[in-house]
Image (cartoon, rainbow, N blue to C red; front, side, top):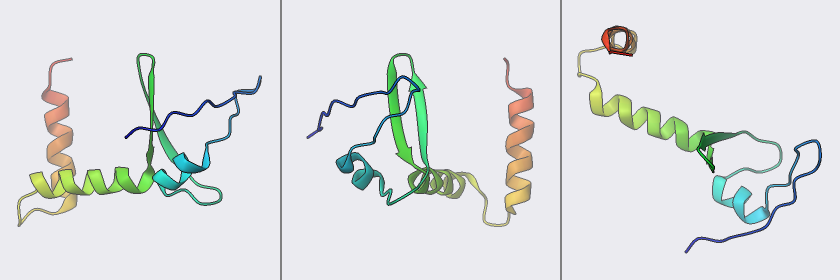
Length: 84
């Protein structure tokens, strides 16, 4: 079940991330989180979870005989050909 907590934002934009949120993200002490903004919704994710997600995507799309450099080059070429 989702937990809702009010967080005060200081005039300079700083805020304190509640302990439950830090624990859920695995952030101890100083750390990094990724902030995603979609309209009026903001999502925080840990860098570790983003790395795991990227690794899973890589494993799902790479061929067994393909180096990571070749994989990234193929994705770059696909992106260049995609309509904008």
